[in-house]
Length: 597
Image 1 (cartoon, rainbow, N blue to C red):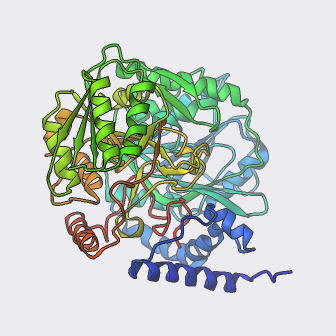
Image 2 (cartoon, rainbow, N blue to C red; image 1 turned 60 degrees about the vertical axis):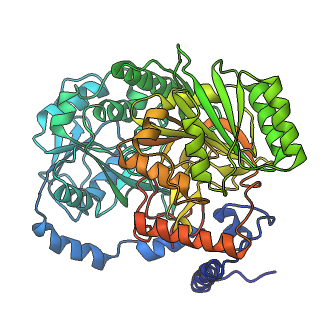
Image 3 (tube, rainbow, N blue to C red; image 1 turned 180 degrees about the vertical axis):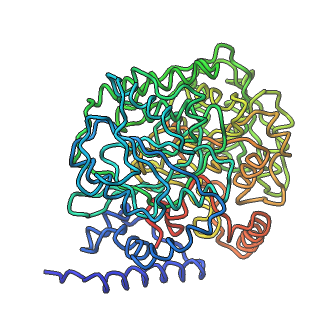
């Protein structure tokens, strides 16, 4: 039997493995993608090593000396906000846990409000910061609103009975407010802590992501709200007890965009504490909370829960009118893939008003020429072939083709894709027409059903990587991010839609990026112009991933690749770029959302 490595040996092994991986990258060596693909957790279990989060905790856990240092910094904070914590429907054991965690806080400007029937444990019975609110309220919502009205604290947080604050939680929130006094809402990362203290399943969250929030309550069950904001939106609402956090978060974020995220584990959830509500009740109230939010925002949408991802929901926006969509399809000597792509477009697409412009970059292959001729005759009103006999430049081909089209929406598509969902264009238009959205992309799969693209993460291996690459296509992904609509900083131009006005506003693709990173650069400029990028899991396509372009396997291609990498590094300062849609505690060595070591 293989000897189980102890913690020190395992740590050393993991660090050496990471160093070897970086060394291979520097040499330009590629990974063998034919080996079995497994998320990091399964890899560690299979090799008898500890779960990666254990390593992360060993490097990042707060020690007593760290907490003592923070206590010495409290008086130096420019802002000293007060925090009112409200607890409802907790049993004696849960209250004891919460009180104990509060009394261990580095930052002590807090008050705890309990229902008058609550039993204050011995360690809190003499603490003047703990109040048994005198209330005549008969239900939870009425009690919460009375507690909000009674407190004079700057910020209010509803504490779930199964949530336990880390000792530095209030300090870190106060520090965030000191850095940005305009913050109205603050949330943090969290994990799961068992009764024996074992910690697991961390949720390292992205920064403020509006479309992500419409698909799931990713902020978590411990959110700090400025008291005046909570009062202005009417506090908590009846009928949403099981989805109370979700409903409040949706309403509060409609009135302010000053939302802060502390990228630290500031609280732990106890899995042993059962929810008083059934999952069906939670889902029903969450769906209603999202539907109400759409009504308030004047957006017509149909909300349903996702069957295979707990706590995740999807909004579909009925179109009414169907604006013209121009599909731009660059190709060269790739007849087999082009035939598959065009067949899937014309035989599966249900959208009524689209036109395909095939930008032929000098094809000579007989199969490619015959494919274009066949479809030009078969779909002579919905397809045009334009010869673009110029040196290969993906950006220039797309820019030129865009000028030859007349659609209100531009859909950039690779010739090595195959459409799988009939209403794919409807789904893309639903999002791309929304004023806040600059670009929308779909879920692209390899032929074996694993993920090729599900949003782009910046900083992975120096520039960028595809979220959840090689995960099973049906998996929920990292806390639902693969299964649900999610904000990312970029999506691939292998399937990307945007309004023509947005494309023109940012100047289209940068033709100095002829081969790589042009779609990432375009998305970053779209974001810089004030728009958001969104990934849609219900837009499904197969993607052979640049089969027609080929790999950078000769001196000229490698030279261009290095030049374009350098351009991206210099333009966007990629070595220091922190992706707001990806947590800095997550790895930059892979695409599996494992902890950063």
